[in-house]
Image (tube, rainbow, N blue to C red; front, side, top):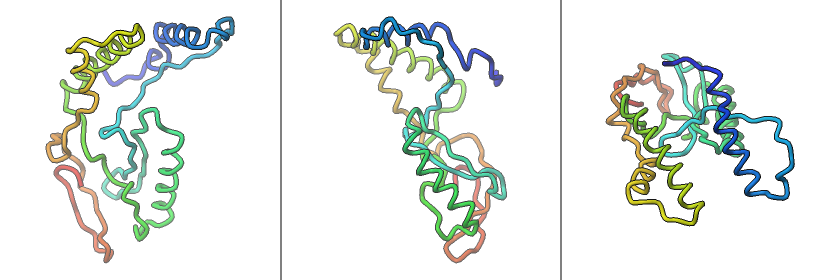
Length: 179
């Protein structure tokens, strides 16, 4: 667990499915040779929106994450948010987009097990819909779990104590949950 392997970047079975779908959706391109594929991990953002934040007690490392396949437009916006945070370390121009996620995925083992259940439900539902059928009730219910998150107040993993700055520039220590 925790290791990134070659399978995280290329999955021959998934590449074959995508190639078959490509040829089915674009029959005029059926003879085009596909030379590259990528089957890497895709993040899942609580709330389905990206966010930016700070790491460490000093908050000196900034990050943006949670794009979930919607990276082009939001990445340009969050790049500006991060640049403003770097250029204005006192936070006078702080963006509300520079925060922690509003919700979290459930803790393990529910996160991984739930992810497998939801991913398989989405696959079954999409396959049924492509055949012109309605997914069964269990598949429809499991697919709806893709929207499930836990409110940050219930997040069981501790967060580091991070200094925050109020409008009058006084440091405020927060922690124990999300800040």
